[in-house]
Length: 353
Image (cartoon, rainbow, N blue to C red; front, side, top):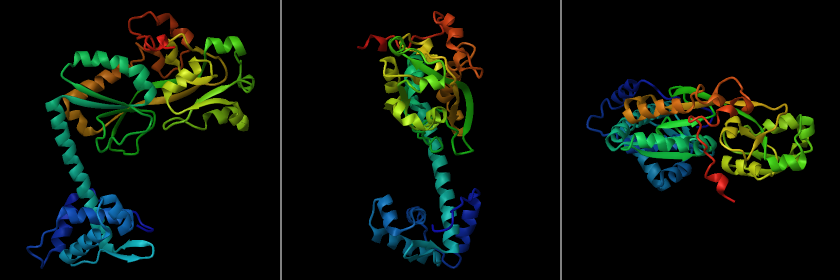
């Protein structure tokens, strides 16, 4: 609403007390959650028209339900003016209570979903596209083989997901979530350095520093959870003229580099999986924390507990040194490429022409 935020009341007992006060002298009245929910939608939307659009009903329905709620409670909850809806003091308090009730209902839904999950053996992962496609997916087959009764949903997407309301069971992401009540564990570090294809380097040579790289073609990825201002920070205002390919997915970004479109940033583990790209040594190293995010309620689910342990093993820096906090140049770990711990994730892709 205009000029004020609706702060959730964490103690739902306050809601009970409020309703008890409100219905003193109104015994027998029923305060339906549907009416309260529509009022909250209108309070958050700021107008009846926006609320009707969000709720999928008519403006008259929203208006009538709010008026009925006001009549039942004997309170004036909001007023309309040119700026939309303006809540009264009682309206703000009721909106806070309604939001607390909505959060409590979501918690009940999470418990019910967790029970169904254990019953049906289903688990969902939301992973950044590069890590999901090139690192976890081949290993996920091994995990599913060891858990044959599980149905696994793997969503590879750069857009962060809402873990708080259980849009997914586990999220592996590069940005800290907004909700402090979620459990966040750092499982590894993603180190990024410039890479290019051998054909590109044979044709144009390898830049030794950022100054020399100014004359080269660059490939960049622009998407959620990717720092869009990293390249301009290093290359300055001339950056736009250097870009040969701009992509929005990690897979397209990799293939642009592997096919010789230019020099681009890739995780150091790329060298553990393919010979199509080679590191370009220059003054550019970046790092991002790899975060495992899940709701506290998820720990009640045995499949989720098993999956959490599996994710930790996938980023074990002893077995996979490229995920350690300390930067390790690909030359240092290439000796381990024949180790059974390393999966050649690009084997199938490298056959594609």
